[in-house]
Length: 623
Image (cartoon, rainbow, N blue to C red):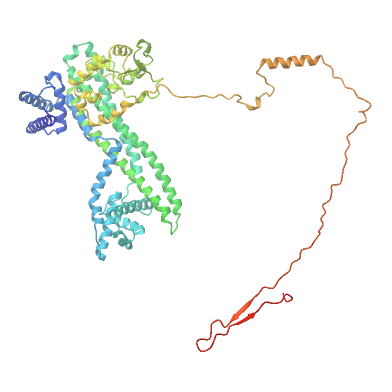
């Protein structure tokens, strides 16, 4: 069967499943159905062979299994898959969300912008209508108040008139479309900056919310709510883990609780915990971004006040860039508000997927079973195994990394979402947190952590065997594919959000670094001994010299020819500077010849031409 035929068959199967579910009163998305179809086909217990074509009986069997699975209201596994599909369909990274948000705003403003740029206003009424449209566009784009509020419109109109009076409409209409759009955006930012500045000075700000203050209150409230939800999910996780560990040893509680449902409920709570941690990370990023934006906003406002200082006229080249920067900062505040709102909605929308816990494992059933058990948190389990580490020499052909010798160990792409792979493989999918301090095993460019030293030793003896066992378990419990991040083993059911994280696999452990140290020869300059000698042979030479001097006597003598000698000085007169002159300068002047000719114009045809030559040269005596 070709790829196109296979896609057509799958679409028909998904369509039939959706119709049967709708006939029974359940509306289910095609994405959810497609995930369940792949999960059921992967499960070897259902007997489907992916290497051969599906017969009609296989198709009917698949449809029946999918419908039964999708309509099971008491399946923690199904609720986990729904949670994963919802998160995958609605969550994007911070950068992608902001890009999409801006593109949506542009698409919504496009009709208003097109109406302005395509205008061919000529009469006074048409020009006035165009100006009102520009004011509405500025308000819609800036998000500072409603275009239907009279006070807001008046304030925005006054701000716009200060930078773009009615007389400029003619010049605006003569521009090409792209220049018009660019000028509209610039006008919006300048007007926004002016209104924000006026609000800070107490002279306006109608319809403008105090976004920095709102964010300072909303972000801590959101993080507190996420922490509360996390604590609730972790309490369930710790209780379920304690019960499963006890049931593996003692079977008497298996009659009260369904072990398979309990494991599925554990996966559900673990998935909820993982998604909340992702949202919490984004909320903390919002808090960090708010702190930076708030400082920049305050500094820019102070700079604006210092530039204006009650002046009646300010060069636009100085103040317009400040207004534009102020507008961009305010847009960033608006982005944080929208992002925080989306995160809060996602937290609320994840809550219904936990409803199965109270239905299957109510508190009055779980609490008596925990009376004789010790419920341990993940932190307590990691603390118990701290101080125990692997000996890399026991496995000479394998690489082990430890937190104290690996600079970026906390950013390594640990397999199975940080859970112990040996426990998952040998204890029917039990999820226990791994402790990196025991040792991080590198096998086939992947990194594994373990909950105990014994688990690490056994897993390291045959990693491929345990990896295969975990893959088989994931086929039976499809929700483990996303929870344990098995997107490389099961690329056909890899969600978009996890496919984007495949770049993390390129991270390499950093166990070596370049470093250098330098020690000063003399820390204190004042303590340097100039006569210090490090060479003991030089010291020996000086000692011998001093010893010889002790046996020497200094002699002096004086002669008759030298005892009367003294220093003599003599002085001479230096030659003085004299000058002589042997001749004198003289000069002669000769007359300059000058001659004047008259009568050169002629006398016409009636008289002959009579030229006269006059010598005007002066005599030598006269000169």
